[in-house]
Length: 280
Image (cartoon, rainbow, N blue to C red):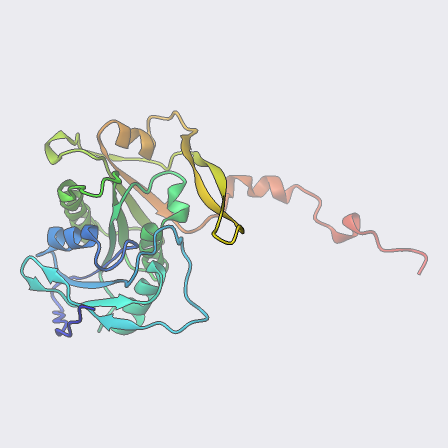
């Protein structure tokens, strides 16, 4: 297990940038992200010790968490890093409130191996790390490369991550808002630019394959395929398909505001639902 206890040199005049992910502290995407953001500020890495893909916004509440010093090599030498026995959201909570000498100025989660567009933001641990930062009042974004190829080249995703990070450090973000960035599987010279998009309406058509273990007991393996239900030209899926980097502002407030008045018109008097007996 690689360990390293280098000090974290936090300077008051330089942004403190926290990096995390859901693919694990040794993921190539995280290393590419650190390389891409070198020079923008002081980098610190706090990421899961094991892969935590698709854990959503789960947190650890019934088990102890440990944060191990970790050897994390950057392009200019070792970067202060901790590997946490928890989820991506745990990592951001623990780093921001305990491990770092002060709150970070920016949290960047990624680079995820595979897309996190449309409904996938609900399942994504990558997006949830950035979402936790937004809950804590820290500007943040998640960045994903839209390829599952094990030999994927993260160069373009890293370069666009640096652009987005620079814009956020310059302009900030509204309270509670984070950015979800998806980079198409293209060489840098073939990407057509950036589009600001909305989250597409989509779902997974899931199938559970029943199998048998050596004791002939049934178990189930999740499969299926992704279905885009949205033909809009302003969505994250459309932008990616057209060769653009998709930048989607999202927030953790799940209230369906346009339906509040409709529900308020319902009869919510308890007596009309369960009339009080008159013969008692």
